Length: 600
Image 1 (cartoon, rainbow, N blue to C red):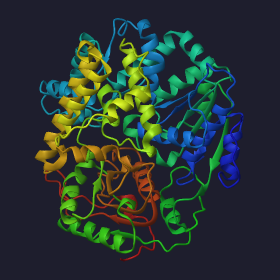
Image 2 (image 1 turned 180 degrees about the vertical axis):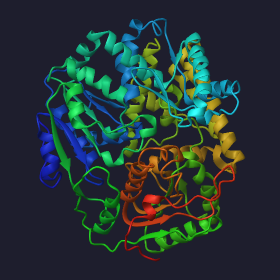
Image 3 (image 1 turned 90 degrees about the horizontal axis):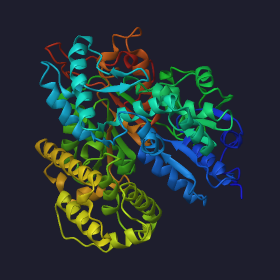
Image 4 (image 1 turned 30 degrees about the horizontal axis):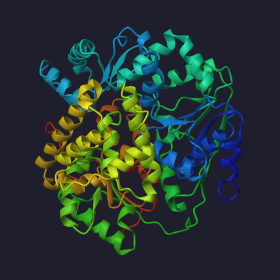
């Protein structure tokens, strides 16, 4: 039966995008129901599948987004057995590298994916061979032609290339690949072995891409090869907002529609979602000052006329910042705003780490949530990380469907390792997991004991399997290193099991995150600081033709469009630049914006 909905669920723009038979590029303004539209499109196309061997593929920027969309589709009552949803890296691993890696000489004798902790250790060691280079200079990404250094300091490039020559040699000698090489080898395979794209095109009638403005050229090329091979039988549904393309330093960009049409050899219909159901009219008017791509945005929230407070403080000294953040948080809670609807945001995590701990000390009645407070490795492709999701969540009805899906992924990983899983179902794995009762206050030790007990109950000798053993060591080594670092920085409680359990819980406290980290989220109140030239935009982008103006506008657009009701902006004084260059100034683009700010 074809999935259907009524007028109360989707507006006309959303319904039109879902029902179209054509490939679509959908430009979605903030708060326009992008995720809902994408969810309904997936559900609609799943319900219309005629072939049991076909899959609808949806590529998301994060695993969290994939889980959210998957849950929503199942909540609509649509069978998801023919849905594949995840990140482009997971897609490449599952559909290209594992089945076809034998055709790539570098992968033909097997390979292991290293996690971010292993990569950091290798690069830190290699950085010692080149004076003046640190691990933080070593960000890079791949194009089809080869790797590109993200470091904007050209004077470091010769030394960085020397490091990467050693790095890639080390990986090759050990049959290892990192996340960037996953994309590179997938691209090479799909170009050198045309049958791969033809096979996948027969399996995928629709490929959907979320947050397309963060997609890299090599990722576009991989998807385009499949779509081209489908010769209009494989359709494309691409969703995003060019005004939020803030991952340019890592190669992400919003490909123009004409270029995307040509690359994919497909008729691509342009559509838009223009109704904002999130923010008040006053907030929309404000963040529209920072658009770089022409966009029509119409307020559609039930509270659109709410009198939003929008402030901009340029007179606050650095040493007064924490006190001001505490004041704004208390002001918000006194106005009835729940703690989980407050977000404190800054351009760099290094600005937030110490502030978060001091806020937690000043506001002990509130919990603080943020990626820098996660106490263990979050490498999504690590087997034990996948299993930790089950270990650290409750056996509750609200989480049952998601935990079943996680259990299915774990069983699939075991099967891929050559373990006989014919007698192992998701229900049994969860039943065995739920029966494990441990009185262990230390988070890492809890997971060690849990993993050992569960594997014993399932009759799996995991230590005799190279992938499981390698992932186990990587998970615990990287987690121990992270906990030690957080403890040194003043978070002694970080290793407790209670803190571990919070990682997979729904957001319950005040969110603390970077601008990049909050993209896609929304809050009643957003408080942003560190809005300084050299941070917004990043100092490396100030050398661009426009002085980094476009980059700064996109970051400010993201900040402003996260807020439903109130927005508090701070460009603090006396935050000092390195090298004795004096204090940072306020972000130029923000300082030049004329607006009737409030005083609170």
